[in-house]
Image (cartoon, rainbow, N blue to C red; front, top):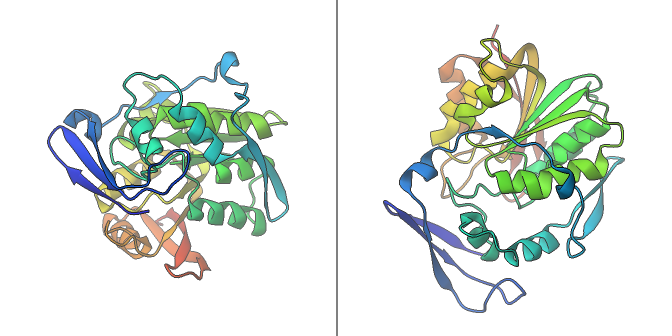
Length: 296
């Protein structure tokens, strides 16, 4: 599938080359998402409280079993969820158009949370394969989507795992349900949606000393260099003094501009953290997991 973004002052045109299946047509079409400029640049963070009536799965939504280095999860099957969502009447919900046309990313509207990205799988495998002490730790997953790394941390006896994604719909219809399918030991879980720039206050409202995390996980979130400063600031605000960050990402995001080297350059220039390549994945587009700690 190919797609491109054509940003305008109040709308976004996306050209999508479609495949022939239940959600798409055979021909290329152009979709215009009418989105006010301000909604594309900032979305205030909020905490989402799982509601009892949302804990069940509609019969159309299927689950699958996944295993990461011996850690077994039950998670929602992405395709059946997409089909279910496109049949719902949400009124004006821009991300449905992205889901319907298999658009992976529409910045400021939909940040790809319904898609299971390969670097998220890499990070989940890494956490389960490496001798990383997670038991009893407080963990935050930024840009979680399906939440696979956070779920693995939960299975490895983390004390608390908090999940954040840009879109509240992703949290409500995917992340929360995946947690409910796997949280048998009642790990403390909280859920947040919105922009990173307002996340700290959502986690610790009106508290001059925000909540801190021993481990922060994030995958496929450094594709846009324009977000690096906002991301590094929220990492600085929320990481415990002796905490560690694991960033799973591609070395280069062609056509977008970001990648692991560029993000490391930003961290060096900002002076808050030091980083090292902790794990490499050989592929056509190489992928890495960075280990980041506070600069001493």
